[in-house]
Length: 273
Length: 268
Image (tube, rainbow over all chains, first blue to last red; front, side, top):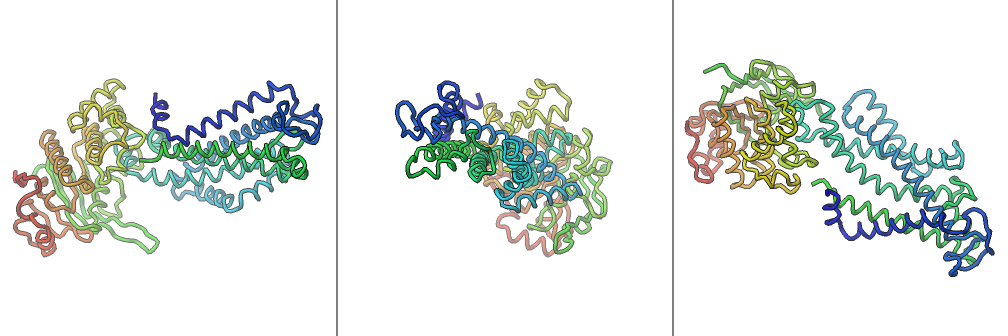
């Protein structure tokens, strides 16, 4: 009911984004299951241009680029959702503690940690983590989470400090509401809606970061299908077989665009009145 | 005078800033009788809002004491008892930050009833509906999103929420200064009605002399953190003794005679 009324006055850009994302999710869920082509083992003639049999053509090992691109999208999206979800929860809780904590020693220490992590360029720090953990799925996940949570903490810290000072929170305290009621019903709901909007816009950055790490060879390793790795592999054949890089790149761009449209729309719909 | 319900004795409040301590309230004595409306007037920065916050316990005193209903006021950062909540409540200046944007009016007031009166969910909502109705919020508005309410409506919801605790004292910190004049006038009538019907004491903070004259039985004039004059409202306005009060009264057109909306000045 609440969502229905929200959807009705949702803007057109949000709906376009949602539709586009639904198509991409559907394709990445179904393509690897329904298609007879294996995303890892090549069974077709290599380097074939797009045709009715192979919509996105085949790569240098005879693998169907369409199936591979959507298997890769599925992996990238799942990694991004897990990474953003964990960062969001950890970061927001830590940030809320810092925002409420005032000048205690704990929040002073947390502030130092958060500001140190945020001071580094994100991709450099992520590369460092991958160098330690190793180029693999757990490596990419830990790199994104370890560098990401601090950004949510910063957002939640600032927001919590503002909300904790708002008069409706003072009113709640004056009415004798318990500490946990004030936190859970009055402070937190006004913090997490903004954190969630921030997480949606971060999802775009994180998907691109996962692809970038793999593109740089510091992420998911071949032959596992991954968009950044695919773009990287096709790069040397760009003049002879453009489809090997261009289609995965287009899918990546469209996925990022759809999420960005949703994030912008969500922010417009829930903006603090 | 009967036993006062608020006694403020030699109150000092100081704010720590990077450039050193700034005194906001510098030695203030104030008494309020049960059921009395006391106005505190003064220019911006005179310390009147800080005094209001000290009375309810939102800011800590540097020295001196605030006694409310026979007990020292407790800082709100500790756990407040039901008795504390039923003693003093506050109406804030900014209607746009005094309501939780994630709560509808009915939910905000019902929550206050639930916590303060220990009623179950259904009874709390029924009581909240009554309270909201008594401050002039329609049934439809009770269920509207807070963000679609006007400033005047929000202040009415804040008043209903404060009344849910059935307080003996209401501290109103410039509740009308963000509203336009006709809305402000009807809100003042509401406060006056509540004060006389329920017999609660009201501490009304304002820089608007006309408003204070309309509402307050007695008035304190504040300047740079101290009271320069106090007395029965009519006396202070008709025959100000302090030079600062004379400046205030003479600088407001009509403040010495009538009030917006044609109401006669309070003279009971």
